[in-house]
Length: 313
Image (cartoon, rainbow, N blue to C red; front, side, top):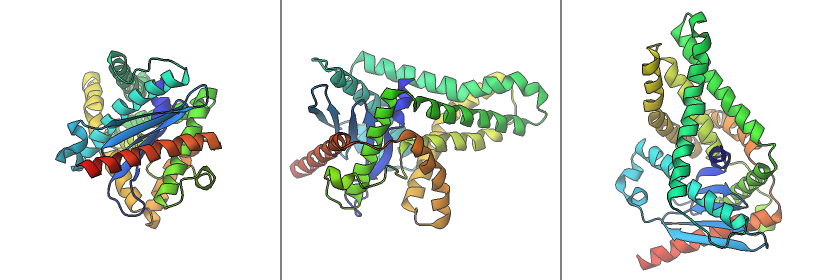
């Protein structure tokens, strides 16, 4: 289940230029490092066993990043989810090789795509189909289809929260969560227009309103609301409904996160953001200065790459 451990390190999007740019950068904590996705480039910085920061930068040339559909409401949420899975797992595998001191570092290939496939199957099986079959054990004792579906959703929410809480006790995951905190601090400092120095960045909070943790929590909550009104058809149809509606729920969750982050000053929206921010206390840790250095390096590299790309275009 490493796929989900590191998904929590994904910061859904953060502003590319302080206070002004419409484009949003995305970041992810990886093993001993941080990845930042830019407008036209990505960079991942990882500290190797010798203490050196190894950086990989590459252009985002795929049409998924540049096509007009990437700006369509709902559709853009699905693109972001796919981006999270593919780019996130690729950078995770890269970071694992660097952190282990591997001389030949692979950034893609059959293993990466196999990992993505297994990750999707695991996520759907455990967090979407699992609660459905669990509620099926006691379904005959629940007269109301509405209540049955709500209980299914509550089981899903409980599984999700239990998983987040449990993995936080794993030492390696604690370090990933600390890099997650470093990524958030770096982005918060950059959005605020502050100097990207470890001593300055370290003063910022580890919370961010558009963090991937909040996105995942929103997916689970929206699933509760959507599935609640689907009635109680035969099991096969219930399974199909859960599978087919996953993209719709993910798209809605993305739009909610995007809207709420843009209107965070509204008292009601601010209140609605609190659960996601509170959950980040489980998925972030206070980073040390060396972790902040890695996160800053990743952001600086991708900013430089984007600037160079703009100059040559």
